[in-house]
Length: 170
Image 1 (cartoon, rainbow, N blue to C red):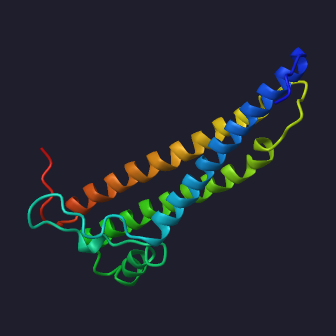
Image 2: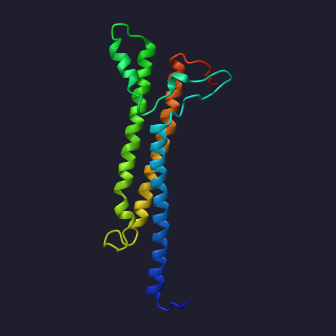
Image 3: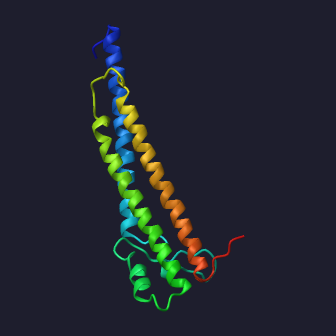
């Protein structure tokens, strides 16, 4: 192995190693955001959730293909408006909001790929452009994960308000 004597060559090697680490972490964040979005859009996360003995949520099986159905039910039964119809529409609205948040975060993540793979330094950002992009990708993933957790918790609580059985909050 050849010995590197100049400080510039050592600095260049360190910068290249750190860029590789930032690119790897950024790609993992991007893949995590894409996987989380696909998981929420395709699979009903709350369907069959058991929070207490003999307590399931069969009515909360929401996917991206069926979340609009409570809105249709609400607007077709405007003359006989009941609380379960309204709560189901609110749950569908929360799920639609969750999908919008996730898709926006995917687009924000994809927009950071240009910065993630830059190798040249700029006057204002120096060599840290990869790190800034990795940071932004991490924030997109964290906000997506938090939105999934918080909105699903709200959906479960609204399911309890809708008269679903078995959720006991202490």
